[in-house]
Image (cartoon, rainbow, N blue to C red; front, side):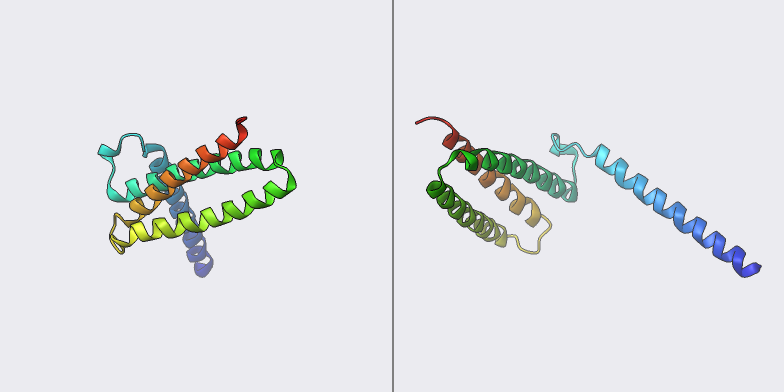
Length: 133
């Protein structure tokens, strides 16, 4: 009986900790204002850079999905090859840019800032393919 009571208390304690942890993560995400970097610490700035990159990457994928169906088969294959090469270039270029601060707390900010910037430019290029010459 005593063992059952201890087991029950342990489950309740761990459940409470999980709820508090989830609540804290949610509160953190809601309080993170990426548009005002003056009130963010380095970790939060890194998180914002990642979120901004993800947003640009979604736009890139949407533009790519709009362009591909408009192309004849021969051009479609060339765009696919170009896009794959561009992704390798972007990743390598941003990895190089980050290497100057490798191991530092600002390294993710540099990397995702680069990823966001290059992705945004590429999205514009893809959108231009939709415009008539």
